[in-house]
Amino acid sequence: MNSSSNQVDTHVVGGIELHRPFQIRRLGHFGINVESVEVAYDFYGRLLGFEISDEIDFGPRVPESLKGQTGGTKGLFTRCGTDHHAFVLFPKRTMHATNPHYAKYPELTVNQITWQVSTLQEVVDSFDWFKARGWSVIRSGRDTPGSNWHIYPADPAGHINELYYGIEQIGWAGISKPLSMHSIRYVQPPELPHRSEYAEVNQGLSQGLGLVGGYRRQDAWPETFDVGGVLLARPFKISKVGPVRIFVDDLDAAVAFYTTAMGLSLTEEVLCHGHRCVFLRANTEHHSLALYPKALRAKLGLPARSSLLGFGVQLGSYQQLTNAITYLKSQGVQFVQLPQELSLGVGHHVWALDPDGNHVQLYWEMEQLGWEGRPKPAELRRTWNSDPQTWPAQLSPLSDSFLGEVFLGPLN
Image: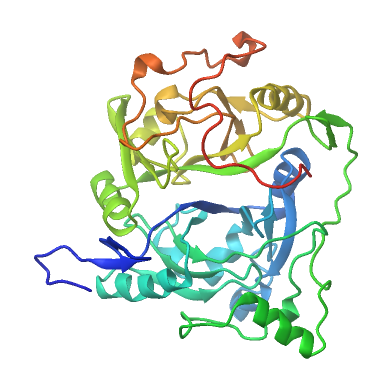
């Protein structure tokens, strides 16, 4: 129940008393707004290996006065595993024309930072909880496509977060759920208890809807690289998206929002060029979100056009990481170096630039925290040079090299 203003709230979530009516379990997916979705997908699809799971056309939402002035209107949901989407690419000018939120925060190129909870009850209860405390909730309901139930709260700097439950899973056939299965459009949390997904599909079948009318990727890149005994179109496989790294106007306000409202845990802080950098986690990983003051952006020589410092993609192994660097360089991808202090807890990594100039961090290993919640002492961490040409051919494992969220499913 909610207590008075001078007391701490108590909410029972799955039989456990918490300070909020939900518990984030992981960083689920991430999205950015780009100048050209087609150009961006050549980088993220052909070169990095994200597969399209569905498309969405925002054209009907563009105001009549701006029709034909926003460039492309198509957005892409992409995946690296069985989750319907791990990464989304949306057209920047169209997003700014259709969502008034971006007019207030013109530096936003982050489309969404998305956090998974374990039950629909948590999504419904969190909607009322955020509203009651005056925190901005931009929208709520259910993704079509994607099927996940969600609410969208914004942080003090305007970054749109998503709390979600129940994202669609794409199986062996690689086909997403047909849009015809989404017979009801939800624009607010549903009444509970809600019917199961199995019951929803059965209703669709009873109405004559088919199971195979969804999207299946059309790309057929030559599979010539041996990745752990499987032939793939590139010499590596992305297993996870994150962490996300953002610049904020007020670091203390951002930390308060992500710890007090969202429930993330503070792992540690560090100084970079004299500025605080804060690392927050949702699970056992060292961090899933890093916060930096905007004053640091200029010190790093980064442009003021975006509040996104960058985001990570985890690869399956150290060997895959070194192979990825060689491959991407051969494809003309530009790499830059950033201070290692920006990425505490992350082992060997590199920073690639996408067509919009976003920093994409490729890595294979992240420090994991145990029951005591303390990060690894600095003297126990790997020391390494940021220049991949100096890296050894092999590494010795650390105690947590293979711990953390496990990639499920075959390499595709």
